Length: 256
Image 1 (tube, rainbow, N blue to C red):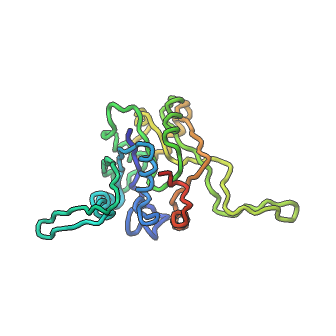
Image 2: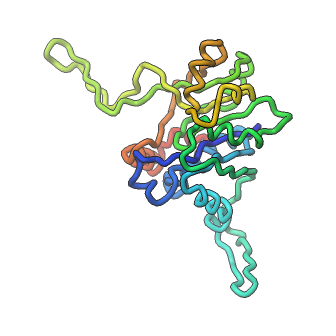
Image 3: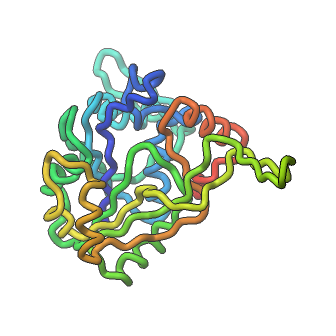
């Protein structure tokens, strides 16, 4: 099964980092968030990826083309330009990646429609997600849920984390104070499963999310509730939080 990752956005709310490289290459630890997302999927055996590129997409291509050299010791002959990976390097992931240029200003719906030609003819389903969110979603159970409900689309619903502390008040006194708790409601957390019929609900100029109301009206949008870890790298504060989690060994998305 293939997984499409939307990697083309401008990332304007993370301008401190995205001024220099695309958002999917913003690092958690010393490795881009895109790698972390792909590791989540590959943990469940998903190793076929389609990267829907846009803003600074050439940098994402360059990262993976030179991946084994970035992550391993190697020797190089300057005369012949032949390189050899040394034995004490890291294991290289067995991923097959399609790099699809989908335009700089293209909407998320357009980025999905423009990779339609790369979806395998013999596979009725494909996965999709955003290039800036990590979670410990059980991808195997997500796919099983989608097949059981047999709808065109399944999205993963998550609880957002409040940006503010929440006070529980009794009269004029504070009973408790929760520092940035998870909110009760659900939001779209990405981690989608789609039948190919999804292309009939999208066009080149619309957001992916704009297709969901029409799918819901036709009872074709299933919702997989994920009540565990999820976090999006939307702002520089999110970038700092995720890196702190990684540094302290509290990365809730690290399931591999």
